[in-house]
Image (cartoon, rainbow, N blue to C red):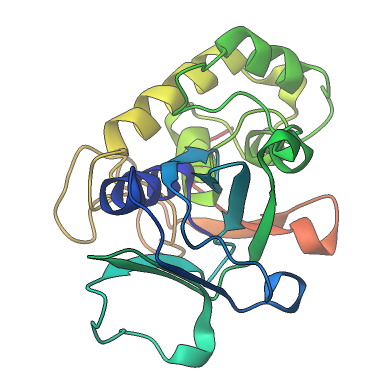
Length: 258
């Protein structure tokens, strides 16, 4: 699932392409919104909120979430799409550009004054202009028995961290993903998470090690069985989550993390 930095980049790319322009045609390919027509209205802006994309069009908000497979791509009006048409969920056209949302996990069009109905539950956005460190810490600390990796992934606590960051933060702070929140140094983890995701928001490749070379960009994530970059011990993996739907794969070094 894309992390907050990926969604932030998508929002900026879409805002550059569509912001301030009048939509000449809209095509929403989901049954609930198939009859919605926003043509003739101006795209005011495209912004991200955690892992959510919000397009402000007149009095409406187009809300989407990429989930696992989704993407937004920009083409010339008559450009050839890189994905099959049946995967398109939304097509937004202006005089000089076309934005297509493929395999979107969530797509809905709602009145802009109801936007908080779909994102109001989110915690402070790590990449937002209103990032609130203290509120994020308060929300994390409110559930002391939850494993720290699960807490960091919970978008109700702070918005934007995904499984890559949760695993990498646990390694960098020397704590197992299963460590209870009550035993974690939350301020240090949150501050490091904020620095990492901010550093990566303009990069094409996410880096947590400081090494941008291919295959060297993460400490533990996706490296099961490979040697720890610090001590050489094989990286292990496991799973965490309060329900089957929330289950996430974890990666950790049994020596460097306690």
